[in-house]
Image (tube, rainbow, N blue to C red; front, side, top):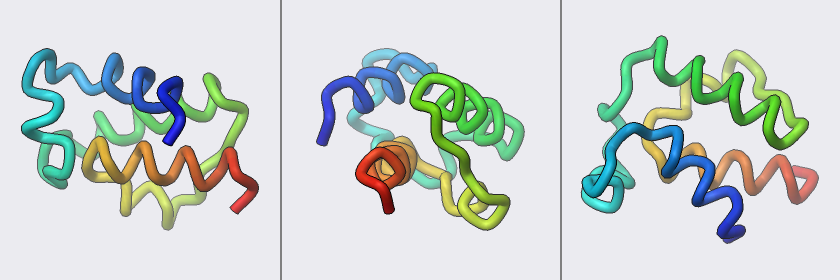
Amino acid sequence: MSENVLSFVESRAGLGDKFQAHYEDAEVWSSFDRIEHALAAEEEFGIQFSPEELTELGSPKSFVDAIQLKLNGN
């Protein structure tokens, strides 16, 4: 996993020192937050998420994994 991606998601998450505790928590953000984070990731990393992918981006871990997949060409 890229530390750059993890650092980006951690900085966007707004969870402070509770990031690790909520890393796999799919209910940590509202749907608006998810879209906001996805748009920021698209701009930061030059990637694009489909509407279907957006529905799966609930936890910080899912964001890290999805960004990594995109950066690896998947």
